[in-house]
Length: 224
Length: 235
Image 1 (cartoon, each protein chain N blue to C red):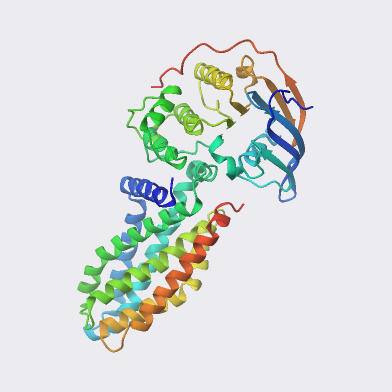
Image 2 (image 1 turned 135 degrees about the horizontal axis):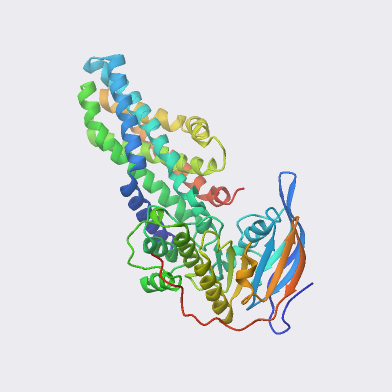
């Protein structure tokens, strides 16, 4: 069976399990909703101020919400030690990693689609720059978060306090990507600068870290 | 000490295997050869190193010292298609039904024929059409499904850790009989268990472990192959 076919099979299995349990999407949604509401009470900005700070607000909300889902990614595989069944099989480890990453990507994209209208309403957001660029930044930024998040979640599954370990490892390494996401989003919303540099930075970041994660995942999967 | 049959090459060759967890040695210098087409029953008290030995052989944990060959290969991954492993935990997804679980795990071995998964469930006495999720199965049903998962790709070597735990006596006898018949088809089976009496009619050899070492190997005369075709259906 090819890596692609196994990735698809594992992804479908994960989506089916998430559809039935709704563990990740519910917790992400409530968390992101809380952040949006609390920030709107805390700042109460004008439309112009909103455009200046929204990039940071949006991505902080998505980053924290994504961590909630990422922590649950491998929890399913640890229950009943199902991961051992994958490890003893001849299936390529990267198929598992890719399936988990794509699954998390889809969960966070769904969250972003649901939360975007709320950001518009609560912060009176209107984009001065082209909206399609926001979509590109959202996709590249989300992939940057989930590819590292899935990898480091796998790295921390055998640690006792993995819920704390994941953000401790993930946030520092995500700083360049976060900088790119926030500045690109702010540039597009305000229309004051070109987001091209930040979009290219995000694309390069995604390629580099996806490659590194794929190269190292087998070692992480079999680590004791 | 070696029990290798003269006609067949050994399936497993262990050479001074040692496994440390921190400073604790779970297995201490195990060597030996195990022949093909035999049913080995590994016995020993809790902490004797039985499960650790099985995990090392399955490639789930690296030995701290020593080496081993499995089906002629130095790396377990090279022969993963030919090995089946049943862990102490069920190794199943609670959120999926029995068939959904088996269908997924069959895919990991490149098997896409639903009939294989159906037959594996029937062989352990479970109904393939049962839509109930595994999380709602009884412990005994999980154990049966776990056995079906381990053997659905028809492996040459089966490593089974406590396959009878939480299974009622009747079903456990049925499972033992099934294992005997599978051995009769030329498969090699390692069963770690505390219930030696269940295996008395079907085992070829009892391997006794204590304090991380193999302390005794007893060959037994077989009483004959079991007769029943499959396990009784579970509720």
